[in-house]
Length: 288
Image (tube, rainbow, N blue to C red; front, side):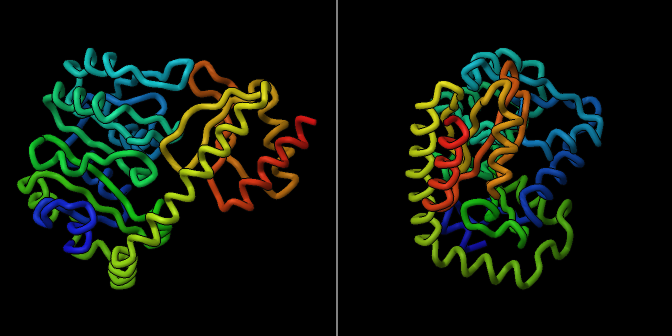
């Protein structure tokens, strides 16, 4: 807890841990939501969260993305009066979109129910809302060491929230021993060398911009801004052929298909400079 506290600059009494951020989200939903609880979120949003809401028969109010793959904060504020819980993955998975800090703070201030901000990809963005829990009692910021720290298999998630919620979560909801000794020790080692993660993130941000700018040069694609470690683009009617052509060269990307009014969405995760160059060269070769 102390290492996480130092990292996010929040008192350890306001921090809870879990067997991955998925488990934290699951425990929150299964204990604080029901068939009568309406959850306000984006469409699309993190798939696991949607699946758990479906499992627990929790109704969702979904705000769709625009043609520019952006969300309208005013639409969220308008619908907030009809919802009990607000869930936002910030940045969004699978689009990489993130509200400006000013916009999301405006939304948080207007919402009276429980607010869950999922910052799984937070280190790749420009801001975190962790410090806001000190003054916003209804805010829960869920984070993980799976993405930027590269520790997905070890399942180490955590959240920051007001002390009352944190105490209830750890003492009543959470399992007695949610983390293995290996996970705990690995997490400590990772947090002792935050500079390694920060250096890697800096490179990823630079490479992300290179991929965005290069893909934007091709008329065949519509490319969307991203604050995560991946880039979403619409290859339109040729998306299946693009996906297959890349697969034949051993390049693996996500075939997402329809998102909003975009029918041919593909998503590439930012890799090493060499991997990214191979991807871009393969795209050039495909387009002739």
